[in-house]
Length: 304
Image 1 (cartoon, rainbow, N blue to C red):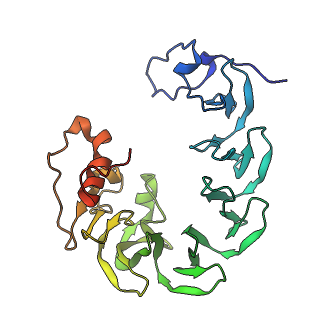
Image 2 (tube, one colour):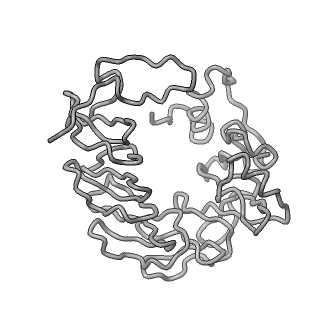
């Protein structure tokens, strides 16, 4: 029998000290999808209700990931482990993995997963596509997989042939090119950075009792540098035609700062491209990503 809950029982993620509203309508606390499933978080966990407040998916999950139910599948964490369930709460992928991700918009998605510290690729039936022998996977497409084997990152194809040599301190796929990082002989106090809660394996190289600084740039398939190694964080957006990229600087000198406030659009020499018109402080959260996108790709290209 499905359990019924009420809107005022749902966590609204208010900040400490905020007045907690007493909602009585479900549309005030969740968004219902095309099949009438609305995600909720209660004191018991995450789940989904219908419009009558019945838990069609029990609130038994540590977390459910958005977007929910792509092709009927929802990625979630349960008892600290990743898996995937369907709209009937059947475990399509059992909750045994350290992480799972993939493109669920595809009808037969390839999934990257980690099990017992090793990474590989599999399908929805858990058939192995790439053996679970790698130490990390940052991403993949129809041809290539960006992986770490031991200390360094490289690229392999689906036959495990090496496409890009394992010599990088970071690497992910970027629209046919590769966003890569290489460590410098600059070190930071590990205990201090950890105490700020700002550690990211993409931004630092762990070398025992210290973190080592990494600089990021972009190379093509031939290994040629097509954007210089000047960013303090991995470059996620780059337009080869304009030579512009979204980069960050001074990340290591300000480890507790939000990376967006240290990020900007730069040309091939690292010169900042100013926003025109400038973004007002009160508009920053809503306007920053759109303004960056249009500086890189052109006016009117923001898709959202």
